[in-house]
Structure formats: structure tokens, C-alpha cells
Image (cartoon, rainbow, N blue to C red):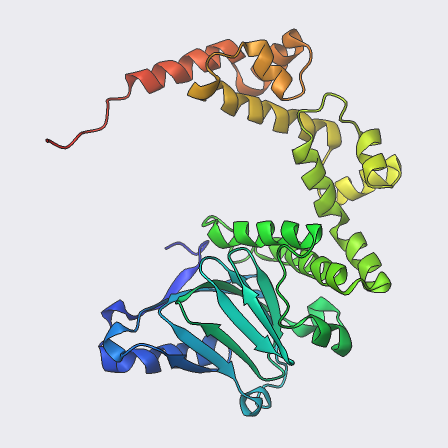
Length: 336
């Protein structure tokens, strides 16, 4: 496991059954948060695989475990000087979050916030498969009332913003090559911005919604660009109009992200076309058709741009990748 991945903090498979529950409790108390953990299995059947990492100011904890209930008591909550906010993302199965008089049932892709400044319970009756993001309280910028109104609420499909956030968080959870370590700060800020946007959409708070919209605008713009790469009419003017901003402001936002509009669109389109040319499923498509799929209406321009970028024509690239795949030996098949 490299330093750029979540590191396995504990796996109970190699521990003597009588020591498993205490080993898990000690690790969670020291590295995550002080909670009581009730395992619903006898010692010999307790299984926990817990991995830890960080993305800048965000802590990340991925857990798979047998049936478990996690409880944060009021007594434990009082012991923390700066209790963080947690976001729990359900990966598979179901779970329940209980806090502030509410119960949220989470299905795969759903997420919920809970506040470690107060008591809460997390119920994983069918086993735990979840990723938890530890968020410093100050970074969310929520008032006590706003936070109270959004804890133990199932988000993920509640709004278009929550769906976008869910997809983003899920991608974070399953991507091994994330910049855990010194470059994680680059991921932390947009993650927090999206969480805030989901909260704003749920609460329908005009002030919070305005702040969230401004902070997530770069992410929205880049998502729009990726979704409309095949549109030959894609231009700074159409992107700016779709986001109700001026072209000048669009360029300012892209500059802060280190993006030059024309260069980025050209490279992204060429990369998409390059991958399609190597796909057997698209073998029957002409070179021009593949180019049009990625917004290149002029086939000669597409071929010229492709050769400038990759050092060979689209046709040569397709033939080379096809020849390579044909030359690969077939996989060994077991004897019947």
C-alpha cells in the first residue's frame, strides 16, 4: 500500500477472537472518534477491516465490518474540545443514523451528516460497508441551527445537488489513486463545497444557497464541460450563458483552476476520441464518425489535431492498437 492510498489500520482476521473488539475500539478512539462499539456477533465471528487516510483537512475512514452498532454518548461528546462533523456514505447494504430526534435510513449512495458534539447512534444490522469523512466543524460554516436541522437526514437522492455530491463522494471512496498525503488539500476544498451545497439545497436557505452556489461554481463549470464535449457548439459563450455569468468571469474562474478553455476542450476531446478508436465496440465506425462523436465536425482538422497531439494519425493509432490486441495470446482455459 503506497502513501497515496488509504492505509489499512486494522484487520481483525489475524487477531485472536478475544482481542478483536478491544483492538477495534482502541484504534477508533485514538484515530477516529471516541464511541462505544457494540458487536452483534460472538468474538470468533467479529470481522472488521478499517482503512484510514486524509485529504488535506478531511479525515477518511473506510470500514467493512460484521453487524455493529456505534454509539456516541453525551458523556463522550463532552470530552472533545473541538468535536468534528462526520459524513457517512453508504457503499452497500443499509444502515440507520439516529440524532436530534430523527432517524435516517441510508441506502447505497446515500449520505448523512452527524454532529459529534451531541449523542448519536449508527446502526449497521446487516453489516457495515461505509466510508466516513471527518470534517472540521469550522470549515462547513454552518450555524448551530442549520447543522441541527440537517443531521440524521438521508441525502444523496434528495436533490440534484445531493446526487452530484453522492456521485463525487462515491468516486472518492472507490478511487485508489487519490492524492492522499501532501496533495490532498487540493481535493479537500471542493469536497467541502459540495457538501455545503447539498446542505443548502436541503435547507432551502437563501443565504447559504448563495454562498454554496458561488463556491461550487468551478466544479459545476468543469462538470458541464465534460458533459458537453461532444457538442460542436460548445464555446465560452454557451458555457457562460448556461451558468448565468459573463464570459469574462468564466475566464477568471477557469484561470483560477489553471484551465485554458480552448486547450482543455481540445485535449479532452482528443483523449476521448483516442480511447474510442481503441475500443473493439467502435471498430465499425469510420474515423470521421469517431471524431464527430467528440465534437470534431471537420475530419481533416480532427486528423491533423490528433497527429499533432499523439504523433500518429487516427487511422494509424487504431490499426496499431487493433494489431496489438490481436497479437495478445488467448487466456489459459481450464481443462474440462
